[in-house]
Image (cartoon, helix red, strand yellow):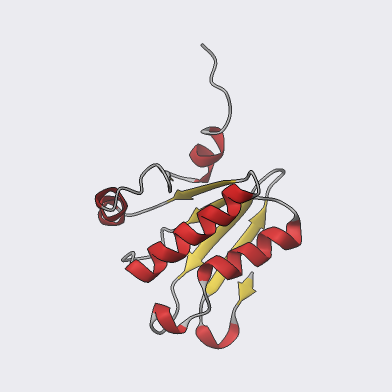
Length: 125
C-alpha cells in the first residue's frame, strides 16, 4: 500500500501478471489538498514498468471535478506509453457523472477488476 502521508490519500496497490490494480481511498480532507492522484498512480506505474492499470473507485462517494481532471491527465499519460487505463466500481451516480461529461470512452467503467482486464482480450466468435 502507498500512503501519501499527511494528505491521507491512500492507494492500495496490487500487481498482477500484466496489470497494476489501484484502489483509491479518498483523503480525510479536501481532494485539492491531497497530492495529485495522477502523479501518485503514475509513479507506481513507472516503478513497476507496467502501463496497464485498473483504478478501483468503489470507495469514492462522489467524483469531483478535480478528481475527474486527474483521471483524464493519467489517461493521457498512460495512453502516451501505449498502455491501458480502466476504472471499475463506480457507483451509479458517479457513472452518470462520467457519462454526462462524455468521458465514458476515455474512462471506460467496468463492474470489477476481472471484467476490466477481460475487456482487453479478444472475444471468440
